[in-house]
Amino acid sequence: MRIILLFNEISATPTIDEQDVLSQCDAIENALRELKHDTVRLPCNLNLQLTRQALLQLQPDVVFNLVESLEGTDRLLPVIPLLLESMGIAFTGSSSHAILTTSGKIIAKQWMHQAGLPTPAWLTVTSGVWNGKRPARVILKAVWEHASFGMDDSAVVDCRQLSDEQLITLLETRQSSTGKMWFAEQFVDGREFNLTLLAGSAGPEVMPPAEIQFVDFPPEKPRIVGYAAKWHAESPEYSNTPRTFAFPEDDTLLLESLKQLATDCWNRCGMEGYARVDFRVDSAGTPWVLEINANPCLSPDAGFVAAAEMAGLNYTRIIDRIVRDALNH
Image (cartoon, rainbow, N blue to C red; front, side, top):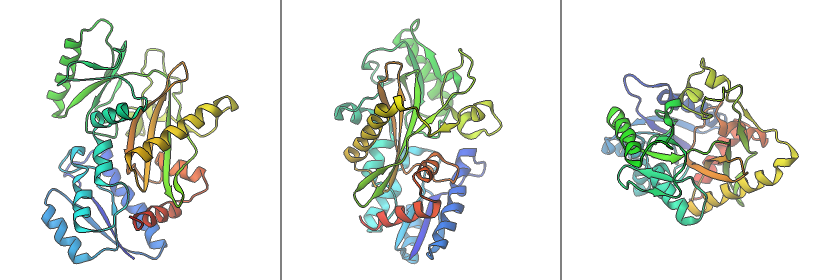
């Protein structure tokens, strides 16, 4: 088949996480060529007419959608799936509806709350009131951006001595300095898990669960997978947050619960292709859904690939299954 690798145009001064899409292109292109497909790379931006014309000229059988951001914001993620849907072109990963539902963290949390899925309490600048019980500690997050954007130790805030008005001031300060929308979420101080799902003939297949370990973190250091832990390979946070797939027998029931919750997220949100659901488990053993990630990173060293390989799937097989699922919709 002819498969277009559609990805977001890289800025003149790209960040580390922005450059990662090129690593994904390299790996996926090699896998597709191993599968005997013809591939063409197509960068895109907000000139949708130009992208549309290129797609009409290239006549792809499938588009591998690797668009993670447009014009410097993840908020525009649904635009490309909408374009492809309007053109009737098969593409990998989730629909525009599923991406819109999950990419905006407030929309996702509202949806999870309505669906009865456990998600930590939250506060936005616009509402000014807590959705859920007011917590003792919070973590400040960007509403639309991913890849742990702006997340460092200062993002975890003890708000027992702060009023909601003071907390909102902190959010407004971050919004002013970054040009992005922020919100406060209950900080669940516990274990962190990632569950990977891959579409299969009988529905989503949950790959072996992974836990992110926090090794030798000082007591005062927040246990989070911040920007440094994800992208700065020379940082202690990167080195001291390994993932593990090995669990004691005592975790069996917890892991089954996480698998069921991840499957519920997939089914209720109408996910397709591949996804990752991130959890925190508190000291009482209660799981909380942090994020539902449509079209997560497919770099060879990413958590998604590591989990699939633990299930016995090599990289080429992963890509093949994602492409085959795109043809079924």
